[in-house]
Image (cartoon, rainbow, N blue to C red; front, side, top):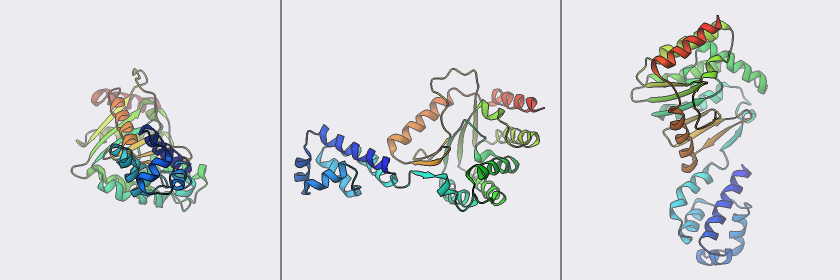
Length: 274
């Protein structure tokens, strides 16, 4: 949180200096005390949205306003440790995102470690959430969390929704749960590929890589990104940062195989289970 505030402060300071203004000159233009400019630039006082707008206007940087406003609005919530999000168990976390999933129409999903949540079977989700619960030492409500995750997955069948899903080939090889669980999960992927709303791409081990494997992320209507780290969940709404994830998704989509080629990789993974 504090790091996000310092980053915002640094961007405002850069806008001022690029405009050729001293802190005293900017304060005079805004009819502020000079100390207010100093407190904002040193991240001691978070700027109000109105402060950001007049700051940019005074510096001739109106094109930076929306990006900075989004950064300011998310500074307090963009980085949330899992231990805080999961302190009452996993079910609440699954349910807390239901509204976002319900209103989203375009989903861009990239996973380099596990099958994406929307495409998971109950058995696979249970095995995964059980391991997460153990690792983070959260209250064990895995059964309820799985039910909530399956309920959220109904958006796959909502008219008008589109899903651009990318997984690394390694995801097909990592065994979550027992052999039967993994086989059922891979078979379910083959079924989901027949849905007209789902574009499932697999990035082969052998694919030339203009970009490296990234952390798991979900993009919602090209306006908001959720990034999953080991220790925390990161929410991104600043347009310039969201655009980077959209661009990364499109780049990696060009590395993936689809249709029969993707089915072949999934089928091979099922065969190797035996």
